[in-house]
Structures are given as structure tokens and as C-alpha cells.
Image (cartoon, rainbow, N blue to C red; front, side):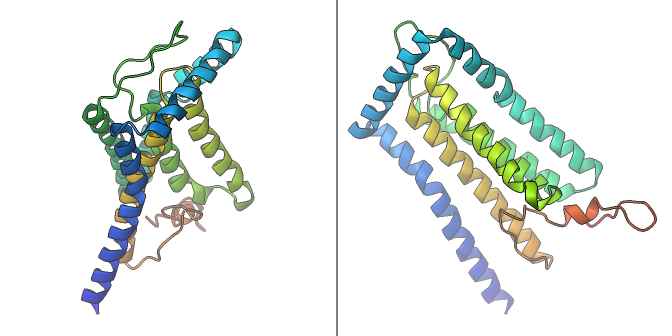
Length: 249
């Protein structure tokens, strides 16, 4: 009956959300507790990468270009904003709302976590880059995670199946790459980046589950990340017999 269905859906959503949040929460607890193995990892990676940065100024310029231009949070948010505008132009209201809410929720969650933890950024001799604000979690890493996830889950149904691995690879390279640039430039610890990744995934998981609940309510089948959040968007973009695009959303 409907009550049993609702109970099962609620329990499943709660379990998945808790599982998604646990890595981010664990990273926060370990950072707050100043866990010795994590501190050694942070300091060792920072020192090794800082030596490489001092020895290779050309590499620093490349890293700064990627972190300040290509993978900058402003760039990522503009891409999501353009996606929301495109969805609105095609009357995909709920998908547009999901993308916007996910981006805003990710930014707010990251800002809240920074002000709760208040972790200082690395202090290195002869720094090659500077960044304001607190350190944990990495805003670049978190924004890249949420933004790439939003772009993938919305646009994947429009990508031919044989090219979808390329889309996934671009997203993974962007998320991993921006994290690497932040640590290599000495403006974040490794644990900051890991925390940003986990917290971004938790936000996307929570909002995606809410979207899946809406799909279930209107009788649409559940989807997997490999299908995208709304596979029907591909049908909406396919020209109809009269030359007009269908409006399945």
C-alpha cells in the first residue's frame, strides 16, 4: 500500500543520505581532533609539493591558470548558471530548480563548514600563492564536485553512449585536478581537499534523492547515475514529426 511504499522510500533515502554524509563528517572530526596520521599526511604532502613548486616556476604558472581560471569556483558556478538558463528556456522547471538548489546548497554548506571549523591555511616559507579565508573544506574542490556532478547528471542523457566515458573522464579530471592544484600551490591541506570532495558528494546525493522521490511520486522509473537524473530530457530535445521539439518535461 501507499503507506508501506512511503515508509520504504523514507528509510532508503535516510540510509543513503547518512552513508553519503559519513565520509565528510569523519573528515571533519579527524581534522578537529588533529589526528596525528592525518597531520603527518597533510604536512608531508605540503612540504614535498612546495619544494617542487619552488623548483619549477613554470609549473606554478600552469597550476595558477587552471585553479584561477579553468577550475575557479566562479567559472564552475557560471557553467551551472548557464545550464539553469538553458533548462528554463526548455521549460524543464524541476530540473532547473534541482541544479540551482544543489549549487546554492553546496556553496552554503561549504561556507558553514569553514566557519565552524575555522582551520588555518598552510604557512609555508616563500609561498607561491595566497588565498583568503579558512582552509577546511576546500571551496574549489567542493564547487568542482557539485558543479561537475550537476552538469553530468543533467546533460548525460544528451551525450551519445559511446562518448559518455569521455564526459565522465572530464569530470573526474576536473575534480581531481583542482584538488591537486590547491595542495601543490600551498593554499590547502590534503585533508581540506578530501573534505571538500566528500561534502560536495553528500550535497549532490541528498538533492538527487529528493529529485528521485519526485520522479517516483509522478510514476517515473528510478534512474542511475549512468542514465542521468532525467533521461526524458533526451526525448524533449528530439524533433517531433512536425519539426518541433517535444515537451516531455
